[in-house]
Amino acid sequence: GQVCVAAYGEVTLTNPTSKSIAVEAVTSDRSVIYASLSAPGIVKPGNSIQMQVVFLAEATGFVECTLSIQTNVGVILYPVKAGATDNPYRVTPLLGLKAVVGEKISPPITVYNPHKGEMRVTE
Image 1: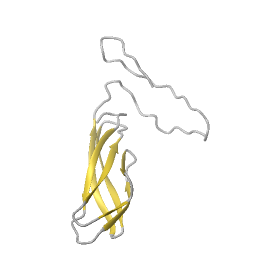
Image 2: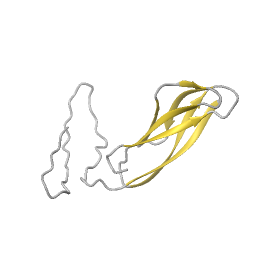
Image 3: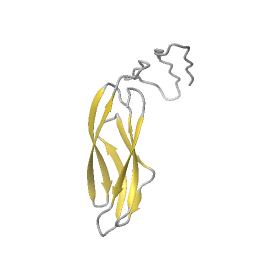
Image 4: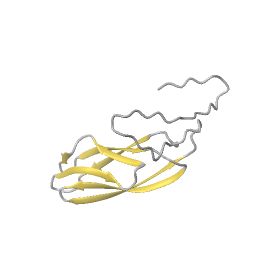
């Protein structure tokens, strides 16, 4: 991935046991890697469930984390490693912002144009 650009991946969890497993939630120990289930669900023996993983890098380099998958039979630990390169537009993350509920914030964002021609930036 690139700094400030979301990179998406998918993890398939397969139930190798002879009993159904209830997958209840997924958490990450790093805020730059987020995992989500489409919905909590029951995984029957031999069946699988999909989980989406999103990596939103704050800096270049590699990040390692552990996803904790909560099930009715305990927690499954799943290691994840992701890497990021520089953003070609030199966009940097907005970190440490504080906002009051209902208040509009408009921090300045600087974008570099690496192209020879004109670049159009839209919301």
